[in-house]
Image 1 (cartoon, rainbow over the protein chains, first blue to last red):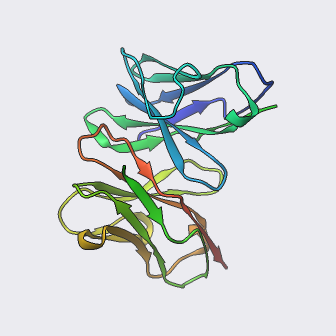
Image 2 (cartoon, each protein chain N blue to C red):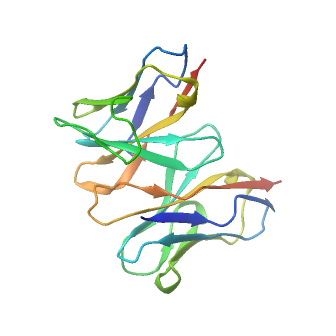
Length: 116
Length: 114
């Protein structure tokens, strides 16, 4: 099946710094990718839709200036957490549908972010 | 707004026991329904999905789910669980044609004792 990778798998940073998380579709092209956030013992919450060649679409309550998304190519989307604070600590997961089959998602393994 | 509710937060079963995990959604229109599984240390994987047709859907690893429209439910079942089924299970919905955005339930932790 299709594979989605994320890098890094975990990152620890100091408060106030920015962190970039990459999401790659390894064997297929994805014009759209999705970014989710998962809190401990809780569900995944959709943060934003990343669109290749255009601006990302953010869900209500998600700060677009805080979580910068760039869909640089058909296989890469990046999420940058700017000026990170301890409350941004979480598990960030991306997903991508195979182009032409939007209803079937392939998920990345996630990135654990810890902000000290 | 759409929401998905999973009734069981933590389920503990012995091997060979039968499993049923509840999932209800709140949306009056047509929806696509999914069950995902997350094994320890691994990424989310699709167990099964329902778009239309036969409301009884069979997925991988012996799992099945039944869509009951009148009850807004999509419960997951397996007649005999194995220790390897220990994982987190998520029910999710999306609207057809809505770019595949998924609304997830809270998740159910299944622990199967050998």
